[in-house]
Image (tube, rainbow, N blue to C red; front, side):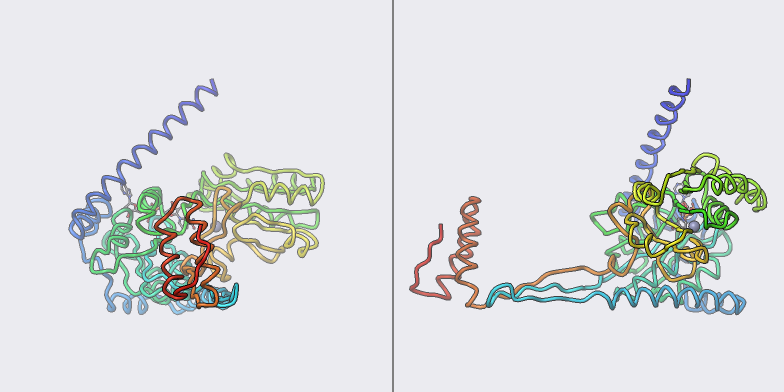
Length: 432
Ligand SMILES: NC(=O)c1ccc[n+]([C@@H]2O[C@H](COP(=O)([O-])OP(=O)(O)OC[C@H]3O[C@@H](n4cnc5c(N)ncnc54)[C@H](O)[C@@H]3O)[C@@H](O)[C@H]2O)c1
Ligand SMILES: [Zn+2]
């Protein structure tokens, strides 16, 4: 019976996936053909938004005026940390050049992408942090034009804290648009925007699918799945802190896994016993999300020693990894698959989510096996160049001509031959 049920569940999921793909493809086609007018139609139909789409200077000023000073100071604090870290990352990267052989110089340049489009999700929460993480990082990388889009709330527009965060981060243009129409506006260059060369930022299934379908035509940061978190704790850990850290990240919802990896059965028992009581103290919606996450995706993994714990963590490759154990230096050196690492009982994943400066756009669903998260690197093209002086030409052209002929590529060989004729007239070379 359970197998039957599972199979039905999978079929339903596959059907929903097909429907989502088809719906987003149809919307993108209509938006590509219909431009601004089609985007306005979708804004009206899906978000009940009938007003202008481009945010004005006056609206930004009004948002700043309406917000309490504490809110603005807090947004500044988070922004300055994110900008400070991104700037240090940028400074750690350098261009390079090397003379591989006399007269053969090759190099690498770091060129910022010309235009980026950041999506800031709407919905139940006001995603201040997402606004900062995407736009600030693009700015610090040196991206020429940074546009942002976020869904308008009916009758209100973009929430004031999000608007303020986008302006502090330095967005050049802000669109009151959500979902597929926002992604289309950014990548097709609707409403007078330059076409984005890269799309960044989280969003719901429609947003993620639109980015996925446009990938190739435009760059994207990543295909993000539900957020996930893993806590490593040994007998030195504080069960109450560990329990809150698991509950806090379970709040993301029923599809978000949380794991506790420990070598202390007693600690595992105390954490497991404490979690339901903590969840019960949350507001109703958050409680429902955390209950579903912990109930369906919560896992405690008991290991025999710290090396086994590290192996488990590397196997899972979580988005967020928090170590509450002795000898933090050992852990930092040993762990190798995670999006962002939080070391010690004083740290917590929420710090990185909101304000400590590292990026919160991170690899999910095990993608930390092969990539890190959003950083200035995503906005920098590592491009190469070369210059060849006559000293290098004799060997380089002859080798190139011969390799081209081994491969059967006569045209390539001739473009090398002609250089030897031009720059060394009258000399003979072995070219095949
Ligand atoms: N991973 C992260 O870092 C992170 C951070 C914050 C938020 N998120 C994600 O952002 C998402 C927020 O979701 P949301 O939906 O509240 O906001 P959203 O901004 O992602 O999507 C809202 C838009 O969806 C579109 N939409 C809604 N129903 C539609 C339909 N039937 N057909 C076509 N388009 C439709 C509308 O245009 C609307 O503007 C969540 O999935 C959350 O997990 C992720
Ligand atoms: Zn979180």
